[in-house]
Image 1 (cartoon, rainbow, N blue to C red):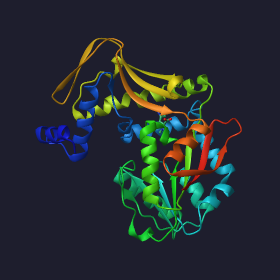
Image 2: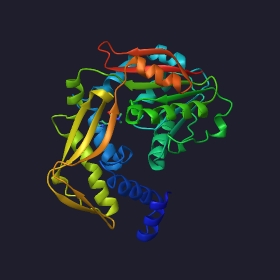
Image 3: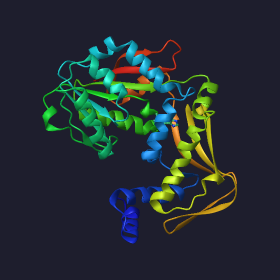
Length: 322
Ligand code: AVI
């Protein structure tokens, strides 16, 4: 816990997770420009809204990646050697990993996620559907170093990082994550990773500004979460969702824009907003095959194979630890 969070925990009698959230929110809203970390999108409501996003007609990444995993399952399964421990970084819905588990004879499945409750439920569902599969959940922040369970020590390792979650990390964080994954999985390890690609800006714009307003609700839920968990008093009707493509930086940026001058309280702090002032909530980086290859290479991985859909919207890569 940082100093800020420790002080808040004492003053407001918060548990460890809530005080870390409070410390980050207060620190980030004190920045110029203001920001909030996208890792806080995923409370129960936010996870539900994200699942709804993945089913939107405009949001192509999920169904396109699933299509590639299905279409290329023979080649992708060949990357996952028999008896390997499949380590999934950030365990979301189990749809994608089920595709791999169906096609491979893995030795064990190791889902790694910060949310212990979610992991337990997910592990239980997989044990039921794949009797005999050894599942060893690890409750950890996958962007930080963590230890693999000793039961998988002797198995070859294959990382799995679908969904282009890599794109939500800043490029230096993405490199650090890939380097850390390489160290954790060890020499000779392999990795299957999904990465969203650069494309027509109109397609990107629609994917993050859907007509039904689900992405807007997902973005605004962050303010609701601050109200719920930190006693904030954000009036969410006075903020609007904005997603724009920043072509120079190859990323979709999500913002919450204050529609008027206002003052908002979070715990015992007040924050002033100018009309039109933004809280920058998320970046979603889009890669070219070349830029992704260079990023992986700089983090100790060699790209062995890549698969895309016919429209080259999304990519799945097999990496080998150099
Ligand atoms: C989880 N992540 C890869 C999503 C993305 O596309 O960057 C999160 C998201 N944000 C808005 N829509 C979806």
